[in-house]
Length: 148
Ligand code: DQA
Image 1 (tube, helix red, strand yellow):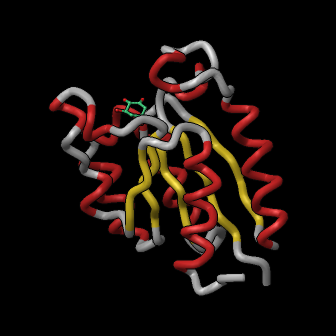
Image 2 (cartoon, protein in one colour):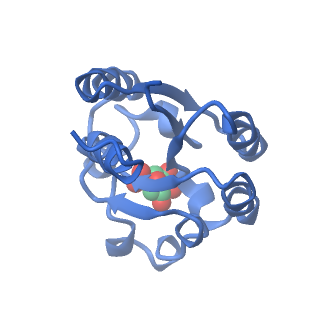
């Protein structure tokens, strides 16, 4: 069976491309999705791409991922820094999760240095812009014991 990863994106990431390009780059979320799909194909795994601006919908996505996906790559946007519910969802579902950010959150404002997601994630990739998505897919594939 092919491994299956959920790539889950939180609030405001639907605006990538036009949202503060000096911080987040000019690549759109649709561009990122298609490069994730291409990269997954080269690794022989499946990816499902999703985005929501709503905290509860992201929690629901974790619940629905149980038994469907082997790992989650999560860019939780600003919920990273505030959401105990999302941290609990990762712990409750026990789905290996990589925390991902386009920007280096530790080089930015102090309120972005706190991450509830980090407390539940297997690892963190940040600061590499859109390229971080492919890095995270490779890292999760290796973590799941699927190294090529
Ligand atoms: C982000 C970083 C967060 O602090 C911010 O709220 C975002 C995007 C990133 O990808 O760099 O929405 O997750």
